[in-house]
Length: 280
Image 1 (cartoon, rainbow, N blue to C red):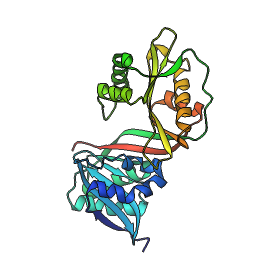
Image 2 (cartoon, rainbow, N blue to C red; image 1 turned 180 degrees about the horizontal axis):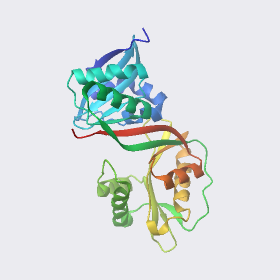
Image 3 (cartoon, rainbow, N blue to C red; image 1 turned 135 degrees about the vertical axis):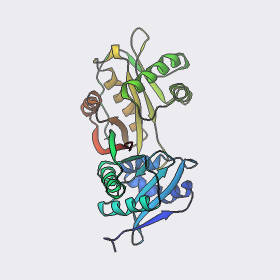
Image 4 (cartoon, one colour; image 1 turned 90 degrees about the vertical axis):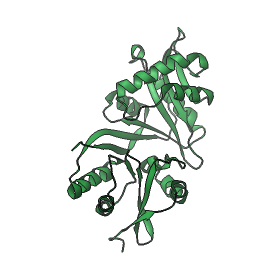
């Protein structure tokens, strides 16, 4: 019965799990985006789980080794079943990354069953834009990043991670080098030749309607001049020539970024939560 969902464990390898359900995830892409980003070859993945109501899949979860469980927007009635399964099988869940309602509900359910407690590490907003942007007229211009920008950009992205208290630090040098080679990293160059702002474009996988604007960072000395708005607007327009919509994400606590994206015309479609287990 639909009111009595059955929890089934996906016994296939992660790549088979992804292939089986990718079309379902793409239908509601912003809520399932973390699942779509799973690496098919990741050896860190421990368990792929599917919640069924009779024979229909209604929710998905992926538990990674000593890291976190990634959830789709599971129905409320399915959360206790998932929590019971995790506890009964002695599965360690140090973190939860999920749409807000599902994530908080699972944390409560796990707490009730085993006494574990979680803290809210971060709220992530998923934004969407489907119309061309009219970027503000500001000093400078958008251009593709070059090898000559590499040192400055690495320094910028190290500073960005420090400012944002990034929960999952990335190798700034590797990211910048790869993005420059693939011509997906763009900078806003001001009149004196300095890089004032930078951002990355990702056209996404085949079948996705979204291209993504990410890794937006403005040098503090150039903030408040509309440069970040111009950069995001120009990159958005580039993506919309090939995709039907643009996606970007931001920390909900970052009020300036939220103000910028709203002003450009982006709308929040999904709120995600990153929860981390408290030490006992």
